[in-house]
Every structure is written in structure tokens, then in C-alpha cells.
Figure 1 (cartoon, rainbow, N blue to C red):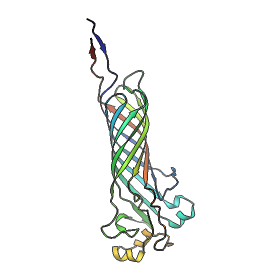
Figure 2 (cartoon, rainbow, N blue to C red):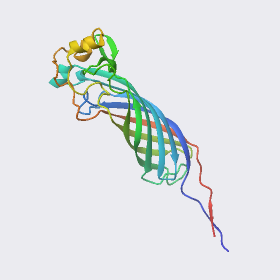
Figure 3 (cartoon, rainbow, N blue to C red):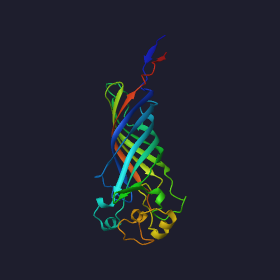
Length: 256
């Protein structure tokens, strides 16, 4: 009778850590995917490794995004003159695939590119500043929304991420992350459709100086294009993360 010991390649267990990096908004106030005006972002990572290839990843992220027509020199945006900023709370779950076998502590399988996809939920609150005054835009009805008919500030998103992992040792894992959120709203920047009648909005909302948040350049008229409602907004982040691996090698399998 012959017994042999085989050590399973899979390493099951949890990782936990954090990332920090730059964030980018894409939408009506940045239609050409310009990357020269980043925000900042950071968050926590929890990952369960089913084996050396497949993981389930959870993230909670706090991201700052912003946009400004004055960043661009095309005539439409210069005439519109809008801006916004928002802090975004983002919670996601993604299924992750390692392209190479990845085993922290291994001398052969200590790095891999990875790709992940999943779904999430995010909360946002766009604000704008004109003439030194900052206001939350959602409750101003800047595109003629009726009272109590404002867009929701909490929505679902799709998540797509990729990057590279490098195991510094058997416990610490360095990772470079690129991640994008495909949003189910076109109002991350409070811009989507057409200009309303400012006098009607003023009488409905009874807010002083509301006109400059609807049309800061005073060049519009009711029904004129304000945004492009065909596509949804999105945001991305690029970051460096560090996680600690709590798992260990599987117990050896005994075969006869």
C-alpha cells in the first residue's frame, strides 16, 4: 500500500485592505473623456479567494468627482458655463478572475493580471458654485423637475475593474487597480435634457438666485439644449491598493 501527499494549489481565505488614487468623471460636462482634471478617491477592499483563480470582491469607496464647462474651449460649453462637484459613496460586489495562478508566498505564482465585473449601489449629491455661492442642485429643479419629483440620489451601477496583483510576501499583496462604474442616471452632474422656464422654476421653488444655477451665463431659453440625455454618466478611478491575506494553504490531500 502506497500513500502520497499532494498539496492543493488553491489557497482559500480572506484578504482585507485599502486603496487610494485618482478619480475621473465622464458626462455632459466632460464629454470627451478628458483626464487632466482628476479628483481623489479611496476605499476598502475585502476579497474571498475561492482558489488561485476565482475570487469574490467587495468594496466600499468614497470618491470625489467634478466637472466644469470652463475647462474646455468649445463654444457650446463656454456659452453654457455650468459646473458641479459631488462626493460619491460607492458599494460594489464583483466576481474576479486571475489570469495566472496566484498564490501568496509562492516563489512561482506571486503575480497576476486580473479582471472583475459586478454590480453596486452609489449615493451622490451634486453641488455647484457661482459668484462664491454653493448650493445643492438636486432640489433646485434646474431642468424643470416638479416638487417631489427630483431625480433619485441613490442608484444602481455596473462595475468593471482590472489591474495587476503582486504578492510582496505570503501575507501582503500590492495591487494596481483601474475601475469604472456604468451608472443608471444621467444626473450625476445635474445636467441631462433642456433648459426650463426660469420664472416658472423660481415661483415653484421660491429660492433666491436660482437663475444663476440654471443658466449662469444668461444665454438660454426654455427648451434649449442643456445636456445630452442619450447616454448615462460614468466615473472611473485609478488606484494603488494594499491588502493583508488571512488565509493559508489548504491541508494536504492524502491519496492512496
